[in-house]
Length: 106
Image (cartoon, rainbow, N blue to C red; front, top):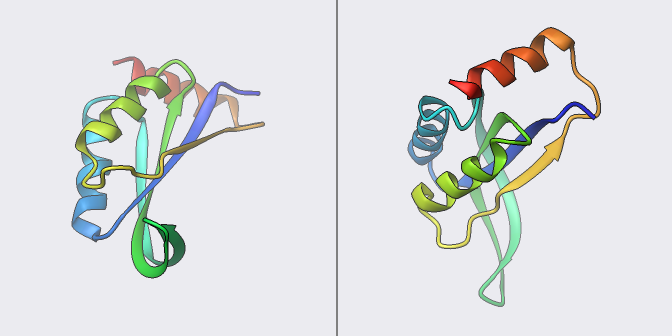
């Protein structure tokens, strides 16, 4: 494993997704962020089935910075209980992984 994480969340609007991406990267919680959408989501919320349009935000960070990124997203996310997930990269180019480490180190 690389120690590099891809972290995902979603929001209801493109503007909110852009704000999350910007604040995560500017705060050096993430090395980069991509806003993807719109996407259609199916979900359970408050005991009811729903479908809606969302915007995905994918961010790159390190294992060490993930707790700070998660705390930041919980604090600034417009939803009370946002989906925040992290997947560790099984492999990645050495130069890319080093760039992520340096970018979040400040």
